[in-house]
Image (tube, rainbow, N blue to C red; front, side, top):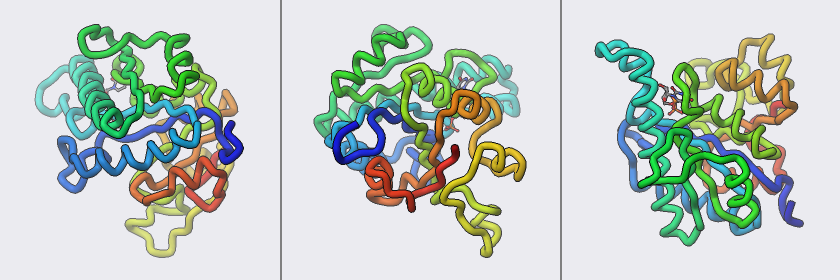
Length: 239
Ligand code: UDP
């Protein structure tokens, strides 16, 4: 941990859809630029940053089923989509002077390293940003589950789930104007109140391993930086 930060090593989960910007698909260069700036502020503080990126802006396994694509095949296509997003992030990060490694759960030696836990940890110790691509490498999982799994493996201090909303609300803030945001909440309460944070596999992994999750708005400028500096008014902390 640096003198200015609460967390030494973070796992940041970004959805593929977030990269798409207003279009909802493909990769928006303006979002890439914005995210690179946000992440650089944190890297410059000496925080070790690992990232799991989704693939929903390009392909989702379940959506494939509707178009006649077998679920397992669709899931692999979704995992490949995350590699495309990871490569885009890497390129943008490098333009901003951040040393970055993409590590894929599916071997693709020409484009990125295979995921090896010890090597990932070594990269982080050297101050490199590590982007975990291709999810868990197995169908029927999600990139949220990948985020929980990798965070536990690399012993991250926290999972930061970057979303389009400011945290976990009592109800859907898009539909219910009276909804209020929790600043902190327990895993048990999230479960009992059936609040949506992550899919159950991802959520349970964090709970069983006492790994805190913070849900926050990745599109609010400076929010990520404030979070790692310990500003408890950013997002919702789940412990
Ligand atoms: N996926 C998978 N196994 C994994 C991670 C992802 O099969 O371990 C597939 C799944 O089809 C998923 C797609 O990859 O729909 C894209 O990931 P996700 O939907 O989690 O991306 P996000 O919603 O974060 O953009």
